[in-house]
Length: 602
Ligand SMILES: [Zn+2]
Image: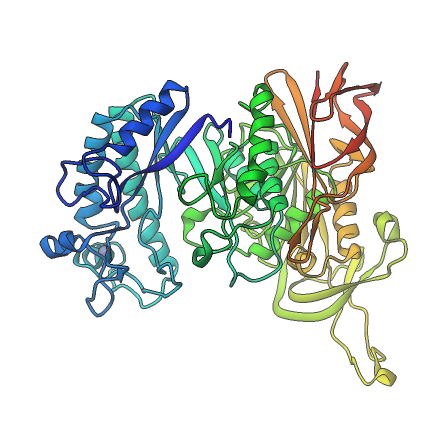
């Protein structure tokens, strides 16, 4: 594989080494008297491969339950949660808070690991078969919840309960992190949570019951968000080879595997591939697809460390820490629009970029906190795309319509050059009615008669209710599209909505970082590495419906990019690309793109 890190099972549910901690027994499937983890660690280190140990403290054996019933998750009726003979533990109970610390202390004292990773961290609401197990009602949870919220644990998770679980899991995350950093200062701490860790884990995976469409940007989404929300932490997005839990040994398409891997590294993340068991799989397609990507990266590894996003547009999404949930469809629609427009963008789920990193435009999906107002007044440009009212004043709200099936009329075509052939745009879904504005360039046409055809829209009326407001705010600008353009585009992919988005973005930020004739299904990321810039191109044209096929090669991709560069070299297809500098832009042409290309600019 040419991988330089191995992440493998170490302990928790079962120990992969002889452990002396009570109730932490070695797997009965391992040869007695052998130390599998220790042997592998030694062999890997001899080949300069780093080893990250994997722990899972979410469940343990019946012997522990019999001796320490207070360690465990309790359903509302007091029953434990049992799955394949294993008992679910509780993040608030002494198993996570005391016993796990004993287990980890032994592991860290005994083995010079390069990192630890935690699977299924915290209370799981579903078992592997998809059954809802409800919320934990153990004595500690009940007492702690009462202290925090002065009420009983609800039947279903609400905002307060999500906050409770967030706080509880982060307490343990911090304790694990402190222990690792104290005992092995060089070792990395990896978890699916962002707090207290050194690396942020995520997964690109599939599940047969998941709602369609597929999300072909899954790896880019996970890595972009991790890198730009928590700069300084390594994003590790695991490319899961299997189709779903029921079929751990049946793999997804080779081209889906390769696409995720290229997306991981094009966005500044680790190249990370996952299998259950060893690499001699019964379905070898995924391993065989991953191998050449690993080999290629090994030969070109100098380009893939310490990458930073050089994007000057920010897509802001809601933070997980508030306990609130945000619309995935609205966010994904905007993500797709930006990628298809070839606008380099960074994703953040917090405001730590404020005062630290400059952007030309900030696009807020469902979360528009008050700080954005001050950001705009200091010269920033903000575009809010959401029927949810921003947490600062933009325009007077008259009414919140949960579902409007109407149109918007384009009143001023000079502002929307992309919509030459379009006078009306579809509206479906929530609309926030703002006070009437006779000067608005985009106005609502409310629902009217739709049938029979003899009657279609004969009663429709124009209004002065805006579909877009643009306001000066101090030295900057705030624009608000008070309906769900992102979700509509995610679902319908209408070019009229893409055109509106493009024209509003270009009005707020006329000096784009990148202009190109590339097909919308070429994803481009613009990264900084030391004093050079890297342009990654990923060909997504092999994706259609539920399939991933080999991407269709594309030719003659012309790129004009902000910055004055002397040299441009393509790395995957070796070549020097002649650069033409004009003003503050450099342009070059990539003759041919197969699956992926890296262009290095100096
Ligand atoms: Zn509990």
